[in-house]
View (cartoon, rainbow, N blue to C red):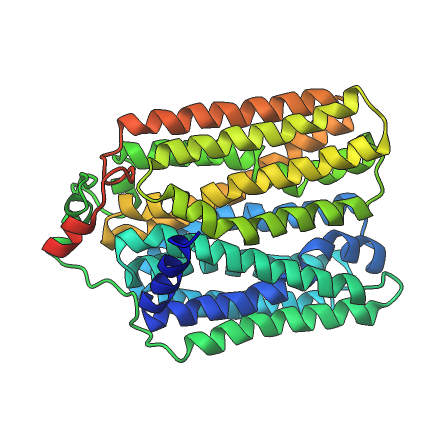
Length: 438
């Protein structure tokens, strides 16, 4: 512990002021998001009178819509810079969130969530590309881990505040939350306006194609431009496939399947979900920096494999419902699932985006981050379908075991990536010497 403390403090001080401001803005945005994130389905159905099925389709449209707009945002990041894209996307998403406060029919709700989908598909890759360009490669894992910790802290605090305010019998209580959420986006935008629009922008030149090589790897073929070049990058495509599998059987299920399983199969009161997610968030906030210190200098492919193993183990805890109906046992199983899953998240959050950005040549960084963000959209579309079909057909334990299997297959694919990554890309060898040569 004595070694970790000074290192964390020194790294915070050493961060560029621009990176600290971006993190501040993101924390304000996360606080606003936490106010509304857990309640969209409840709001659309119980407050606005939209059927559960239609509300579910509207939420799924956010993920599906992002699949269409994500590649366009990726190209825009590479052309006009991540700062401009991030600012524009924040304004679009703020507009969508604000409009949600006034939806009173399906058509208006569709318009609002479409704005949210368009904005969100540009915001995350814009922010990731921006941070990747304003810090050195060896600082990226730590910065991305800190970003994830702050995101969860903000969402957790926002969720707790919303839980005290929201009332399904009061339209005004929900509207006030959406107003505050929109203000969170605008606060982030205001922070970004204190920074140069050129921050993080890449000026295309002949050296841009050798960025990955300078980090110890091989760049994709420069024979063709744009997304066509990415099709020649075997390591990145393998990473995308692995990440998509882990998101579908990991994150997508924690957001959709877990709630349905806990309430419909385990028969637990919905309030225990709040306790489980609080345990999840608390584990991330308390454990992220500790895990970051332990991952430094370790293989990223092994870390991603460890994520899949932990997520599989977390789902396995739910199988206790097949042998016990004791409420205490079931609640402990639910909390164990959320906590072990969070440990996997603390390994995923610094590793995946850092690996994406070490594989990306600088002139295509926007496209690489857009494609990596689209794995969440794939999970948002396929995950609910998978969980809904099996749980809706009363194949609850089959859902558990297939989810475990999916995570563990993803773990095997992640470890196999070690063969196609250079030691620098895999994090086994520091890229500091390459950076110093530059």
